[in-house]
Length: 449
Image (cartoon, rainbow, N blue to C red; front, side):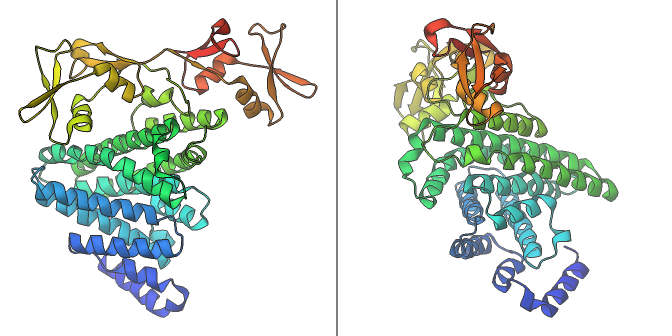
């Protein structure tokens, strides 16, 4: 922040201190100079938020753990540019601190749009904790991170040497997700074992896929911003980024019925359909495509339709044989791969590995995948016509058989009836079309790709 602006705001703070939340303003007022200060302050913020049941608590707790994990990577020399990552931690944390400080003063006109949307929603408490966390991650990763990364290298330099370290952090977020969800369960009074429920696994995977796409978006934006040398062009770019991230935040808030659905409970059909539409829009705004592993998986409690998707054999080996294990080629195995750690080796059950990822079996695809194998799933899924009718015609509507309709079904409520567009209903679930399957389904119809 410019010194003159900061001095003016401090003067306003002195004159109007009785109108301010002094404690939180004090907690967020001083810039961080060391990572130790970041960790201590985020611990203090977590205590402050927790004491007031403020839903911003989860984000600062997650961010503090991210900071600790990055420190571990630097200390154990698992990254090449440790000092650069250390500077990112400080810059990243100070962006959040300053946005919070300005909000609490309050100087709303100076708060970045994404953070303003996030903090306002936290204050009203209308969104569930998972969605509130997603909004904070959205502001931090999509708005703060590109600017900090772009400023981390002199204008005449290049970001290219740092790219590998940047994306090395992705597995860290994957490994953090289960503990994050257990925290959500504890805070909400639910058993930690809820994470084993199929619906919760879907939510966990959705958040991780979103984080991956967010971090890719942030890197791409950082490269674009770093390439701009004209200050006016840079300011215009940041303004456009602010507006783009606000739009994504607004769409993310519509995911709340899905993300905040009570752990272990089936997700209503209408909620699934809205979540798929929202996620597809978010991925498109992030420059990506909604992965098919979620597109047809959401909220279903049985195996689900999938196209081929990659399987990470290194992750599989670590999960079953410890952090030091990895996948290696082996001519003695029919699938060409083993897990190895030191002098030990283990065979890989590729079909079992695919089932863990909600697939049915593994298939050899040659050079189409980095390890030559992908997972495959079934090609059809049931469609709940009663849910479809309730979504479009009210809670009293239901599906009934009808000889006058070519697909054999109508929606009905009292004396009113409506036709059912089965293809449209399937498209809302991320599938291509409806197919007649006879007695293989309770309503004789399924969605298919």
